[in-house]
Amino acid sequence: MYLCVLLCDPLWLAVLFFTTKGHEGLHKGSQSKDMDNYKITTLNDFIILKQKDFPYAKGELSSLLHHIGTAAKMVNKKINKAGLVDIIGSAGEINVHGEDQQKLDVFADEVFIGSLLSSGECCGVATEENENEIVFSDIFASKGKYVVCIDPLDGSSNIDFNVSVGTIFSIYRRITQRGEKVRNEDFLQNGSKQVAAGYIIYGSSTMLVYSTGYGVNGFTLDPSIGEFCLSHPEIKTPENGSIYSINEGNYIRFPEGIKKYIKYCQEIDKESGRPYTSRYIGSLVSDFHRNLLKGGIFLYPENRIVPKGKLRLVYECNPIAFIAVQAGGKASDGNQSILEITPSSLHQRSPFYAGSKNMVMKVEEFLDLNR
Ligand code: AHM
Ligand code: MG
Image 1 (cartoon, protein in one colour):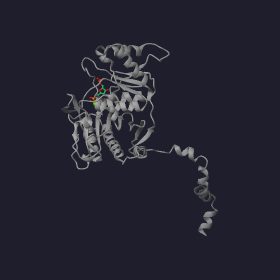
Image 2: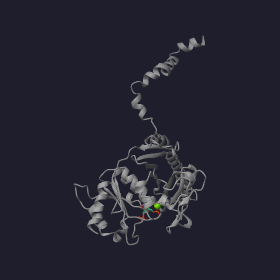
Image 3: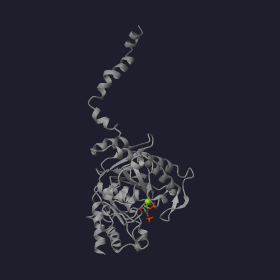
């Protein structure tokens, strides 16, 4: 009787229709198109998916990348609180480069080291904040296949003023045998040996961009679910760009070739789209990331005060160069490809020119002509 009343009610019948046959009918025809909008690929989904690119992979690199992603989320959380809790400003220590260590430098350093140690896949880490490489003696970690070189918080002098900062990382297969104590040479491989590299940008949104040598992909952190989601698949950088990024305050001390290149950027020439736009944040990751997407060049030449340049080859230039090249761009020290330089020490510096291929080639041309 009750069922009979229900079946006679037109509203109830409509509900029944849509939740059974009607519902199926509504999605027919439009399903494949609309569903694409709902597809979310998280960083972890993507890492697992891409593991298939490596036929002999056992998931070790995937696990390592996953742990880097987790550490990035922890650092991001802390950075977002800058200004609210007591984490901005100096930690009161001077680091290995004679620079004032910020509290967040120390925090990020500890978080990344801790996360890499717990991955069990990494046997040692070299970071900007530590003079020597850190060797993991933990029973699992010491058997790890990889070493990581990392700048845990690059551009940290910007943090007190709400300007974007970044993390830069580089992963190498160790040279020493598994189980052996990891040595300095494991960290001093040339950049072309990188197995994976990437950066995290803590900006208006937080992004993780990385490559395992099969192109470059970018993931944006969705804070509502705490996941990095694929937002920039297969990033390709334009061969030509219209942005140049350099600290022009150092102009007077630049090599002649760079002075002339800057003037070239400022000249009017319709065909090549000059004058170019000058953009400089002073955070390598942010400057490079913008240029990667829009087309441009980042320059940090040597000058009389820093005769080898300011940026560090192992954990700043190499990973960024790897991303640039994987995206179709170029990275050079003015003479040769950054990725071909064999480092002789962990904190070695190098002049650095990275970005759109033709722009980097133009800088090399200017430097060549003015030697
Ligand atoms: P840091 O590692 O001490 O943070 O220094 C590296 C930063 C880069 O992010 C940036 O490109 C460069 O230093 C800016 O240097 P400058 O202030 O000389 O222009
Ligand atoms: Mg740095």
